[in-house]
Length: 86
Ligand SMILES: [Zn+2]
Image (tube, rainbow, N blue to C red; front, side):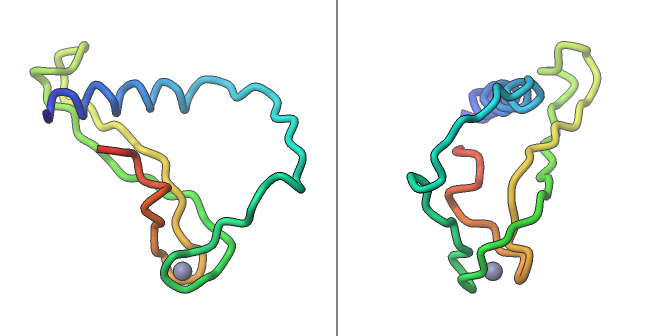
């Protein structure tokens, strides 16, 4: 279980660091995401840190893996939908 989580975290980490292809999105087809806690609609980038034990790390050293999430700019709440799925 924990092992799987770490694998997924690494996969996400790799995906995040890959360059994003240019998005071509019709804004009328998007919906505003608001804070579940206070209804605010602006967010700020924050990182959750996951620690990968030396035993599982490909480098053999304890590794910190930053997981990028978005927190409400007003109250700091992180919507459930923004969190990496465990
Ligand atoms: Zn909020």
